[in-house]
Length: 440
Image 1: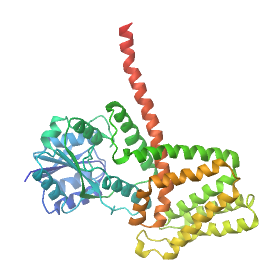
Image 2: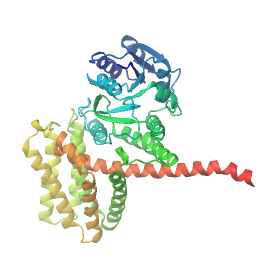
Image 3: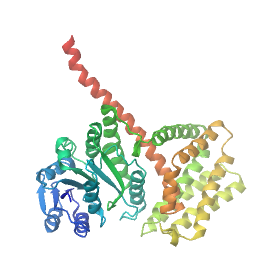
C-alpha cells in the first residue's frame, strides 16, 4: 500500500482544524503523517495543530495556501500527497479509498473527491453554496480536467515534476486549478471519484460568496483559460452554464428596459420575489424581531406601490399574497422535508403563481414582457437538474429561494469573464510594447 502524507494549510481556523484532525485520526486507515502549515495565524490555530498533527510548520508570514502546500510537500515523506483544507472533515473511508485507487491503477497520477450533501453549517447561504459545489463535482466528468485541493491526492513524483502550486496569490484562489491544467495538458491521468467524500465546515456569507466567485475564482480562471487556450466542457464550464451566463445578461437587460418603460408596475413582481427570498433566508435566524420589522416595512412599501397601480380586486389579492412571506417566516420550516408541513408547499406555490399572474395582468401587453417570461423559463430549463437537486435534497421553498440567487451567480460570472478578458488583453498589450519599441 502506498504511504500517504496529508498536507493541510491553515489560517485562523483553530476550531475547524481540531475537527479536521480528529476526523483523520478516526479514519479506517491512518496516513503516514499529518503536516499542518500555519500561515501566520493570529488565533490558536498553531496550538491546536501541535496537539494532533505529526508536523507543524510555519510559513514565516502570510504567504497564501499555494506556498503553504508547497512547503508541506517539501517536508512530506509519503509516496502520495493528499491535500485537504483545514475546514474539511474526511469520511471514515476517505484515506482508504485514496490508497486503493493508487494501488489498483499504476497509471493514475491524481485523484480528487467531492463535498458530501451534509455540510456542517445549516444556514441558507452555506447550504446553498456547499451543495452547489457538491452538485458540480457529483455531475462532473470522471476523467477530470483539473485538480482540487479541498480533497485531492497526487503522486509525489508527479507533483515535483510539475513544480507544485503557483505561490503568487496570498489568498485561496485557483492555484489547484492551474496545477490541474498543467498536469492535464501534459497528458497526466486525473480522476474524479464521486464516492471520495469529505464534509465541509465553512460558513458562507453573501459577500464572501460574491468576493470568492468574482475575485478569487472568476477573474483569475478566465485569465487562465485565455492564456492556456483550454476551456473544458466540464464542471462550472459546461456549455449549459455558458449559455446561462448569456441568458442572465439578457434577462437583466430586458428587466432594465421594462423598469424604464413601466416603472412601479414592473417593481411589483420583482419585490414579490425578493420578499419570498428574504422570508426564506430569515427563517434560520433565532431572533425574529429584526427580520419581522424589516419584512413589515417592505410589505407596507409594496402594498402602497400596488395600491396606486392595481384595481381593487387585484389589490385585495395582492394583500393576501403579502401575508405569505410573513407566514413562512413565523412558521420557520425545517430544511428537512419530513418536518415541513404540507400546506407550506401550497402557500409557496400560491404566492409565486399569484405574483406572476399579477405581473401578467398589470403590465401592458408588450413583446418585451413575453420575452422576460421566456428568458426566466429558459434559464430554469437550462439548470433544471440543478434546481431539482435542491428540491430533492432540501425542499421546494429552499429551491425557490435558490433560483434568483443562482440567476445572480450567472450574471456576475459574466462580469468576471468580461473583467478577466480585459485584464488579459491589457497584459498582452503591455508585453507587446517592449517588442514594438525594439522593432522600431
